[in-house]
Image (cartoon, rainbow, N blue to C red; front, top):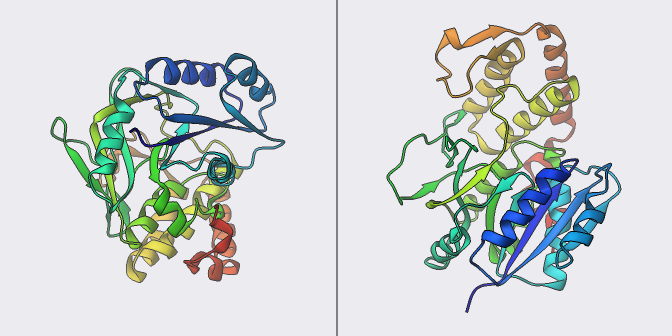
Length: 315
């Protein structure tokens, strides 16, 4: 018998992409024992109404404002626990496309092969087929990316991009949901993976399962001051929580100031390639935003270090 899967889709102001994602998911997934929970994160054009009309079997949750990635997904997980009680929870972005009918079967099969597997991901590619993400490792002060792999390989990783993340119920019951200190977005997926590993679970990437993610290839997604503050704030929180003291100090007080001042030209280039960087016009403002991130982390230090935050327990 197929394991029960709750598919949590978070959406915000991407109605066309959401409709395409749902169409693709429902028509091209050769797996029957699942239920979709949509969390409309305050979309202005009311995605919830469109979904209720065109996809009546989808359970719709409407937030009146954008609560961010962690909070909204936790709301979806909590409701799925209450009315569906699945074996797995799949967090899926609203800009995905399915072109492999057995993608979910492949992931579940690997998940069922070992009870110590807590989280599974798959090969995520851009619409043109170029590899986007298959996870990576925490090495020293860096989160590295795997760029090459053998066909059909199952990778044991430290973390991966949470746009398609399959989580076992047992793991959520043990460590809770996504940490909402990372609201509104960024690094909550890597944090969750590393928390799972610290709890004794492994993280696997099923490269034989592939999904298209329509994420932009644009290098700099941090286009305004609010986004840049979030970038710094979450990076400092992540560093304090998961890096050794030496590596955390380097990342927080050397690497992040450099990020504030310089910008990468090409996202995939090695960070050691000096020619791949240019000076940011907004460098002075960024440095003040970084100071604000330091202050936030200082006043929230106990919360950052707390490994048993009961607020994240969802069942």
